[in-house]
Structures are given as structure tokens and as C-alpha cells.
Length: 304
Figure (spheres, rainbow, N blue to C red):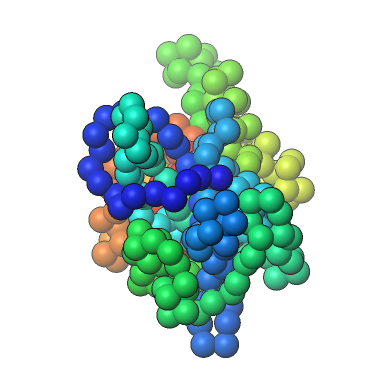
């Protein structure tokens, strides 16, 4: 839990406090309703957030903090603006960074009052804007409302770190992950679970298969092998596959190779949204394509 914050300012030094949270929403009669929480310690109304545990990612911290503060499991959607501000309050320099996501609440959950959050109200965007205590949270709410939140994720992963080609004497299709790559694959499990996927698709090459095997075991899902995701696959076949997945409306994780990703992110598939996805992926990184009615409305980056 975190004390009330000042308005965001340019960083004055290294980040000392790392936190994450969500604008949690559910479908309402006239549009999405946002969960606004009351913290008795500060007597304020805000969004759920909290500090990262050691070794924890921002994304998994956001999901955990929402559950701890509200009792709601959530499925994360698109990224929202990051807040950076000074929390020194007259002492040594302390800069805080808080990353946020839109996140849909599980329909069958209920709020559980606790020592940190004693009230939760579901409000329309207009009502929430009036109830929130700080302008920074009202700005966050405006960003939440500025684009659709009822989206479906399609995540395009580059496979985890593999044994170097020069150190592998067999067929390149059988070149496996390195020890570091296996660790990256395990680290992806919690991160990917936050997106509520129900389909796992991979290039048939072993390094891609091994990247998603931990997630497949965790979710109890079949790992489908797709030639359109293979290294040196026909670019038009790769693009056609992605168009089909985007139109399916099914939350999907797909693992492929570095050369294939630019073809999948071509403007012919994604339109103007592709501009957000130009930078090359590191091993075990991915692009999250947030789709609605087959169209990509936002692109985020993800890593385990």
C-alpha cells in the first residue's frame, strides 16, 4: 500500500520505489464501470496498487495487489500511462514509478473488506472522476476511457534464449533452449497467465516449443504447432495466420522467431498500430496485440 502521492514530475534521480496497479473494470449498462477503493489510513479514493516484492515484475505485482486489496482476480488488458513522482516529502530523494493496466474483474468474485481497503464502489467513468481524490488518478481514468477496454489479447513471443548455432552440431530445427532460456520460459508462466489466454500456438522448432511448454503444463492446454510461425515461413502465410487469429476473438499466445515478428507486425495486418511495434524483441519478450472485432487497438510489450 502506498501513501497519497504528489503530482507527477520529471524524474529527479534513480527510481527508489517501484509499484504497480490496475484500473479494474466490469461491464455496466452504459459502458465499463471502474472499481474505486477507499483507504481508511489516508481517507482517500483511488485505484488499487502497491509495491513490488523482491524479484517480482510490474505486471504480476499489479495482479497480486489488486487481489490482495479487493479480493478480485483480474485479467489484464492494455497498458495505461505510467506515473512517476517525487515521494521524498522533505527527506532524501525518493522517486516513485507506478505502472498501470486496465484489468477486467472476474464476474463471480466479491469485494472483501480488509485493513487497508474498507470500501469499494463500482462507478461509471463520470462518477469515478468525481469520486477520485487526486488529479493523477483522474488523468489515469481519462486514459482508461480514451480507448476500448473490452479487448482480446494476442501475444507474439520471440522464443527464449537458445543454444548458439555455432555450438550446435545437429539440425537447427532441433536446437534447444539454453539453461538461461529454460529459466526464461518458467518465468513467463505467471506473466502470461495474467492475460487469461486459452490457446497456445508455437513454431514447430524445438526452441519455440520448449519456451511455451511450462505455460502449457500450468494451464493444462495443448500446445499447437503451426508452420506459419516457423523460421523462414512464407511471409504471406504468417500474416494470414495472424489475421485469422485476430478475427477469432480467442485470447492466444504464439511463440515464433525473431525474423518472423516483423512480418507479423506488417502494416498490412495491423494498420497504423504497427508504429508502436518497430523495436526488435529480446529473447522471451513479446508484443501484446489488443484486438477488438478483429482490429488491433493497442500494442504493449511484455517480458517474463
